[in-house]
Amino acid sequence: MIVDVHAHAASEDFIRETAAKPSYGMPYEVRADGSYATRGYGEMDRLMWDLDGRLENLQRRGSTCSSFHHRHGPSPIMSMSSASRLHDS
Image (cartoon, rainbow, N blue to C red):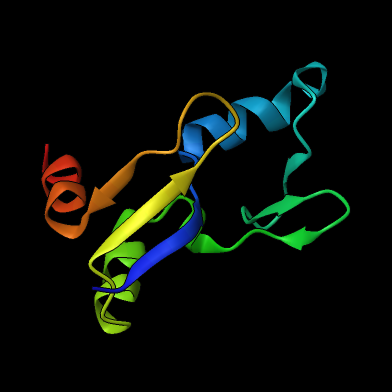
């Protein structure tokens, strides 16, 4: 079993909303071309919000699970089949 133990995820809605409200304290920004960036870091990896792309990438690497890290609460471990069901709902 191969487990991706360090994955970040955020929806595009979350990225856009937090970028629009600097008081939230998140370093996200929406660029003029529609891409996203993290201030002080650079362009955001599309796999941050693109679930189809993330699943394809994990399958290509032979990963069977991914641990998603987020700012609040525990980091759930999600199997590929669970992620697919979540995406399809």
